[in-house]
Image 1 (cartoon, rainbow, N blue to C red):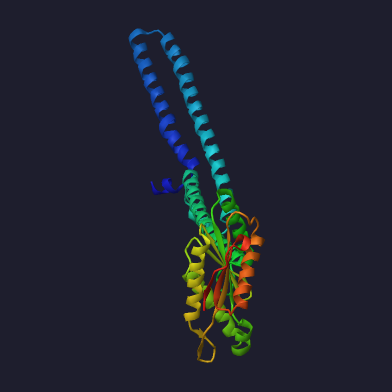
Image 2 (image 1 turned 135 degrees about the vertical axis):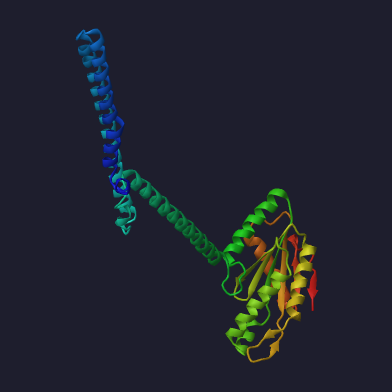
Length: 320
């Protein structure tokens, strides 16, 4: 029995064919022959024997041949399918050990091949998922590099101007207020000359963190260039923006900065504020208006906040 289980499917079909058709058919013919003999003994006519043989034998032969053809075709098709599956699995998994299917018939081999292919497919899907996660991480890093300033972690100049364009268009469309602050570190060149560029870089990063700590989540802070920063403050009137700017100015003034030699030093900033109130129509005009008031803050003593309003209606000054 063990040898039969380990043999090929063709041999198994042959044994099954013998057991299911040949032997029963032979037994049936034997029974027919015996019955015919009994009938002849009782009735005598030979025509009964000939009629039985003419009908029973051809019918048995037809049934047997039909069964053989069906079995043979099924076996050939299954064998061909097994070979195709083996060829496919060898292409998919070249290093697959072949001794695993040596003692299997065609059906068992096909089942084994399908199982291996499903396992390989699952592995590929897991690899694709990992690749997708890696690609997403890489894309996020690329986006971060494209829009962020490497030193301060704030948004860069390009992204700031793009955001300002978007926010200004929205403010114009819905007649909402929009304000910006331009922030410049006072005497930053002297700071670099006195304490070195490493201390200067740390000071820039520290000012960036202070700005982020003193604005809302909906506001956007960017390093505009050099020692200059920008804050975009949507949905805010000028007088409220002045309070935000003053909060940033005061926080910078109160902070202690590392000089690089174990000492702490003070740093101040000057801030110019401008706002869209219905007349300004381009980001460049809004930045230029804020720059004008930033320069005014510089000229009037530094470490202060100045507001520019459309038409120069008023210029409040806050700070030291």
